Each structure stands twice: as structure tokens, then as C-alpha cells.
Image 1 (tube, one colour):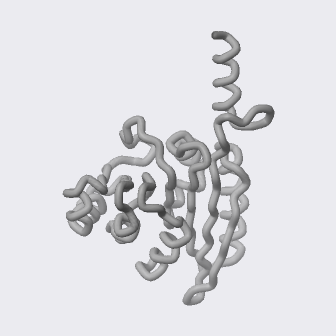
Image 2 (cartoon, one colour):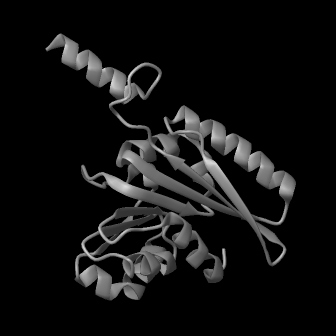
Length: 190
């Protein structure tokens, strides 16, 4: 994904000044810089399995790291120690693993109720993009997200496709999230 597309992705993420933002697959830290420029009291955490990418991100964002606004973690996402923090927004650009149910379920657990996940993919092939959207949409919903919205732009002969999904409120009853049902059961037992 070229650096020129990252500003569009971050713009769609619509980061607020006090948001807690998680990036899965932070790469060289270009998007981290764009996100951190929008934060005042918020924070950013970038995860990447490559030590070289984490080091590059830390160098690029040294000022944000030193201020405590940004932190980078070197680990596979499903194994990353992110503490007990909840995030307002999470995103991943061209991270194929983020089409999988296990990764999406972990993301749903890390987002606050009503939190937003933005997944961005770039493909020269419309059939591949449609297949990716179908699989990812099914896995997002199985992971507990609301049905995602999608947007696509043609850029330089490629499709930049973004899926935006919201975690449901944990206070939902009925067919809502499993978390809400478990909380209701605990309250009845008390």
C-alpha cells in the first residue's frame, strides 16, 4: 500500500483528539504519524510482528513515543500484550490476517462498545476484492461486529476497499452480543 493511500484511510477512521487508537500491522509507522498528529489527550498503539518495522515506526515517531502518546509492540497481534485497555478505534491496512475470525474476535474484545474497526485492502482484481469482502464480512459478524459498511475508490488502477464495522453495545439484550448476555446472567445470579 503506497503512503499516498494512508491519509485517505486515516481520514475515514475519523480520529478524535482524545481517541485511543490501535493499529494492527503498523509497518513503517506512516499511519501512526498521521493518527498522532490528530491526538491531544488520546493515545496510539501500533502492533507489528516484525522487529524491523517496529523499530522503523519508533524512529519515525520518536517525538510521539517520548511524549507518551504512541507505543509500539512487537508481536503477532493475537499474542500481543496490550494490557486491559479498551480502544475507541482500530484499523489495519492490507493485513490479510485481519480477514480471519480469530483476529477479528480479539479486536472486538479490545474495542469499547460502539468502537470502530476499519479494514483497508488494495487489489487490482475486482473478483478477488469481492471474495475478500464476503469472507471478511461473514467473519466480522461472527466475531460480534455489526454488519460493516463498505466504500471503494479506484486509485491508480487498483481498488482501495474499506470495511468499517462497529462493535455493538454491551448493554444490548435479546440477540445482541454474547458479552451482554453473559453480563445479564451474572446480574440475575447476584
